[in-house]
Image (cartoon, rainbow, N blue to C red):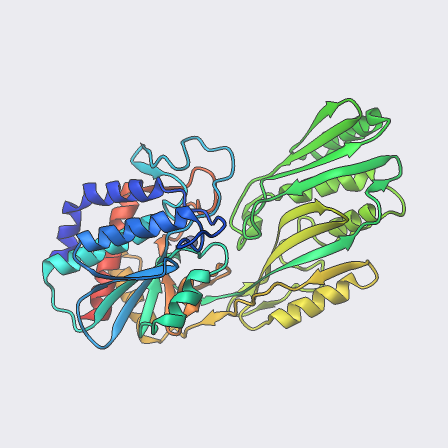
Length: 465
Ligand SMILES: [Zn+2]
């Protein structure tokens, strides 16, 4: 396959393009005229469109929500769905999160593996097919979205105006092939509070987490009391016993309690350490008696803290194709007169949002805590293993990697694959490889980037030949 060899000659360009697009901080911001998701996603989209034009592809921009670039002709279209937006960088990076710096043959930065690196890989895969002049009978179309991480406004707009490809893959999860994805819902648990004092202590602030789909690595509470030495005493005792990663900062009659956890993707809460859970655990020690705050804290500690599958709160569902439900309390806020906890749930393929909501409501009976359903229900995806697309992609994966044992898998992550019929996620993370998406020090190794470019070129060829 001539086009595989060509890819090696693109190495410097592939690295440079990845660094350049990572340098664009494309987190969703408030929309502006012509920039539905703010300036960052807009700039990232235009970077990709310029590159596609340089490569000689026909492009079409759908009002800066999304865009596509085409290679070849044909009535049938093979699609590749990529996203150019990123989640916030969070704290604790060793290298600048938008620096695209190379250390030890790895490119570091937010989006390197999720999903800018793979997007660049797919573009160069198409370039290789184009320049090798290998005959294709179908059109290949790469679709660029700019709002995958925070609402999918991009895909809604795109598919409202363009017909869907006949089949597609998205390089935004894992290898080998993801033939099933759990359903996803985001919702709030809200407790009205008449007063934010509880006994001698006033809770003046409480906040943790940046996004529902991430395990929060930070949470803080500010407490006020005339006798802060009691809080301090209890704090020292608590930390000594539990060894939880908590710290305390004192000022006159206030203390700030800080919990530091380990971030992870919201679809795998068990891989992280939830800072909210650490903090709530301590708050459970110091608030006593009948007050709204205590009731909420107590509910959290009883039903949610350190459990990852909804088993404590009436929704511990599981099935044989996709396993257990994933439950991620991603954000907490003390607002005007309520405490709000935002939760991201991935429910098993054979379960439903209604079932989850009913289970939780039942479990919350009598607590005064309300469940407020999210606007979206991202329904599960399931493509049988013997489907053409799944079979072809598995063949390519096996041939390119020599891994003959792996089988198609199901995940809790939600990818663009569910934005259309007949689509699956395919890579970029190999089995056993460290998961760095949505975490500090996200990186893609140059070797990995080159390998996936070859796999994607081969896959596109097999699907479109
Ligand atoms: Zn992604």
